[in-house]
Image 1 (cartoon, rainbow, N blue to C red):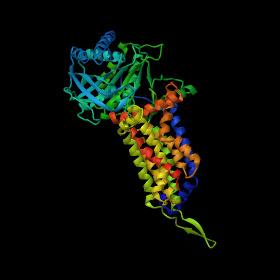
Image 2 (image 1 turned 60 degrees about the vertical axis):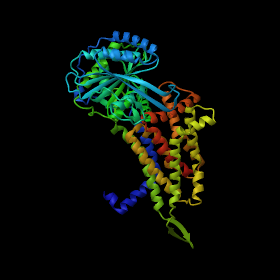
Image 3 (image 1 turned 120 degrees about the vertical axis):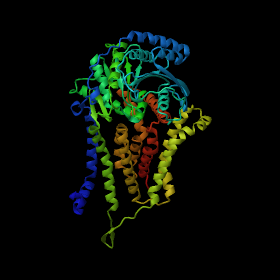
Length: 613
C-alpha cells in the first residue's frame, strides 16, 4: 500500500509501466496463449473425482436385461411412426400406460421468425408424450427425467424403445425415492422447450402450448438419450448447453465411472481417451479435445436436449450412441444397465448436485481443468487493455512542450469536446441496434425486391448492415464538423479500451470460451491501433467479429476431421449466422445480441479511431 500511497513511488511505478508498456503487453499476450495451450498437458490438469458422497461408489447391481425386447420395440415403434407420418402419439400413450405409468400429452406450436432451412421447417406443430413413475418410498417432492427425442426417419428409434423398456423395468422396482419422468419429445429442442416451459409455468420464448395435466416433483437431474445408429460402438457424453452452461462435473464423473465399470467405450467430443500424454501425439489429441469443447461452448447453442434443462438449474447431460469404432460394439442391454446405474445413483441424492465444479474444461473424461487454472489465461489478455488504457491516461494528463521565443514551456493540452467522443459511441451502438433488429424485420421487403428466400434475406441483410458499418468514420466526421482534435482519438480509444475490458470480463465470467476467443482476436489490434495506418485497416477487418466466426468454422471442421473448402466453409458460415439468430429467437441464446449490441459497436469505435481526422 505504501507504494501506491507515496506520490513519488506512484509516479515512478506509473513511469515504469508507461515506459515498458509495449514489451509488457507483448509478454502478457504470449504468456496468455502459452498458458491456455498448456492446460491440455496432463501434469497441469486435475484427475476427476466424485465429490458427492451419495454418488461416491458405483457398487449397485444393475439387473436390466431387456435389451432384445428394446430392439423389437424399436422396430414396432418405427412401423407405427411410418404409418402415422410422424410421432405415433396414440401408440406411445398406450405403450406407457401398459407399463403402469401415468401418461399425459402436451400439444405445442411455434412459428419461426424465418424458415429453418437446415431442418426444413417454418410453422412447427407437435406433441410431447410423457409418463410419470411415482416414487413408492418418498413424498414425491423430487423427480428425475429421462428423455428421448422422436427424430425424423429411423433415427433415435432405439432410444425411444430403450426408454420404454427401462420404464417397464423400473416399474417393478421398489427402491425409488424420486418420481421418474419418461419424456418423448417431438421436434427436438422446440418440443423440449415447450415441455419445460409448461412444467415450470413460464413462457419466455413466445411458445404456444397446452398446460401440463400431470406434474411430478421438483426436477433434480435429467438424462437425454440419443442413438444415431442400430449399431452402437461407443457412448459420447455431451455437456455443452445453452449460453455455454455446463452441468455439475459430478454428472460427467458418474457417467465415466459406470462406463469404466461396465466396460463401455466412452468418448468426449467424439474422441477416445489416450494414455500417452507424454508424447506429442498424446498432447495434440488432448488439445484438440479441449479446443472442441471451447468452440462448442463459445457458440452458445444447446448441443442436445439436455442444454435447455440447465436454464432451470437442472443438472443434465446427453448420452449419445455413435458408430465410429468398428472393433467395438455395445448392445442395448449394456446401455440400459448404464442408464439404470446412473439413475439409481441420482435417486440417492439428498440435495441437488453442488459439491463439484460448474466451470471447467475437459481435455478427457478422466482429467479436467478448473476455473482457477484457466482464468489466468484470460486475465493475462485482459490486463493488456488496462495497461494500454493507463498509458493513454498518463499521456492525456501530461502537459505538452512548446517553444515560445526560444524558451520551452509546458502547455496544458486542449480537451476534446463532448461530441468528439459521444458521437462515434452513439452511432456505433445505433448501428449495432440496426444489426440486431433489422435482419428479421426487413426479410419480407428483401424477398419482394430480390430473388432470395426468407432465410437468405435475413442473413444477407445482417451482412449488409455489418459491412455498412465500415462507413461509420466518414459519417462521424461529417457530424463532428471539424470538432475532432489530436487528443480526441486518444480519449475515444481510452473509453473504448475500458469498455472492451468490461465487456470481455463480463462475457468470460458467464461463458469463458466465448470471452477468451474474442480476447485472442480483438486485444492485439485494439491495443495497438493508431490513426492513419493503412495496414491496421486490413488487420482490423481480418480480426473483426465476423471473421472470427469464419475462422472458428474452419477450425472446428479441422478438429472434427471433416475439412471443407473455402466455398463450403462460406456456406457453413452463413448457416451459423442464421442458426445464431434462430437460437436467440427460439431458446433465448445470448450470443447474437451480445455480438450485435455490444462487441460489434465496440469494434466500430476502434474502427473510427483508425480514420480519425
